[in-house]
Every structure is written in C-alpha cells, then in structure tokens.
Image 1 (tube, one colour):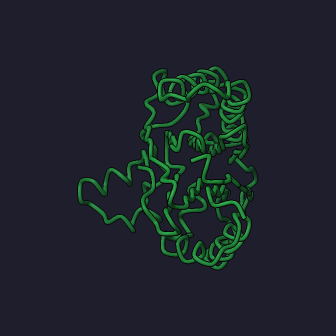
Image 2 (cartoon, rainbow, N blue to C red; image 1 turned 90 degrees about the vertical axis):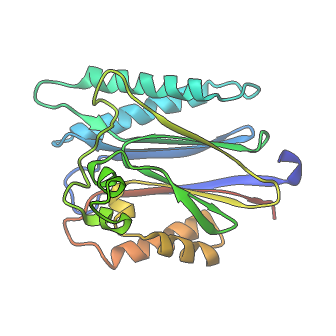
Length: 252
C-alpha cells in the first residue's frame, strides 16, 4: 500500500454539550507509516468519568509513542494495552466513585495495508469504503442486546431507555474483554473511519454520515458538516459529543 502514495490524515473535536463536565477524551496521531486514533467516554459523575477517560487514553498514547516502527502491532499487544488501561482505571476507583470508561482504538497501517479496530463499550468506530458505509462496531450495551433478541429495531437504539447501560467497560471488572477486528485496506480503494461517542452517534445517522462524506474534501470538512446535523437536533442539556475522522486517501 505504501507504494500507491496513500496518505493518512485525521482530525478530531470534542464538545462539552450541555453538561457540567466533559467526560470524553481522545486523540489522533501519526507515527511512521501508521495512523492512530483513540476515543473514550467516561462514566462516573462528578468528574470521575472525566478522569477515567483521560487516564485510559493516556495509557494508549504512551504505548503508541514507544511502539517500534518495524514491529507489527498484533491483537495480543492491543489486548494488553487495554488490560493496562483497565488496571489503571480500577486503581483510581473509590468507594464513592466507581468510575469507568468506554475505549475505542484504531490503528491504520499504510505499509501492511491493514486496519486494526478494538473497543470496549459503546463508543463506535464506523468504516466507509470509497465513501460508502460498510459497518460500525458492536455496542456493548443493554440496548444493543435487545436488538439481538428482537425486542427493538437497530434504529431504536439511539434513544432507547437502556442505551446508557453498558455490559462491558474499562473499569467494570478485573478481566476486560476486548472486541477486535482487522480489515484489509485495498490499494485500489479509499478508506474512511469515524470514531465517536454516543453523544455524537445518537444524533448523526449513518445516512447523514455517508451523505456528508460524499462531498467532503477533508476530515475537517466532514466533521464540520456532521456537527451541523447534530446541532439541529440536540437539546440544551445534550451529552458531551466527540468524534475523530481518519482518512486513507490518494496523495494529491
């Protein structure tokens, strides 16, 4: 893939919305032939979720910073990073604040031609190929399980009464179960990823994501157009909302 002159670009934003604390945390960075993105959405109230999400993101940032350029990033390594993040968050918990956080991770490897996706919780990773929607990650939530059992439809998740009840999270138990997925990055196609918290995807539909992507000329423009969709729907007390767009496109 490296020989096809593909470039990795990314952009992110976070917004406190109508809440007292912003409990979302994340970042995008590039290193050598790889691009990385991390998104976390904390739970705990009174600022506890803010501390949990920032701590988890910092663990992954530290591991990314020291990862050798000539060494493949394996699923086992990513699982270990998540385990370390889980240990840190659990060590921060108190009797009064059992803080937790979602955690989503993306690594796109331009040289190897593969993307690694990992997540715990309901901060989603969306994937678009040649600007067409392909899939999003599986929410580890009560409402997503209700879809599996046929109690509700997929589109009903967004404002379901149990949408905030997670069955997996960083800090929920000593043994964290990470969901991982690898996808090939075909050299003849362009690839687009969107990491976002539930305060974002609850208001921006997959159809709106794809439609705005069709005309966007950069990750910044794509995010800007999707944020406009969100602003038209949210109420004054809306949740924190954050997103990171990662593009693998042909160099201009």
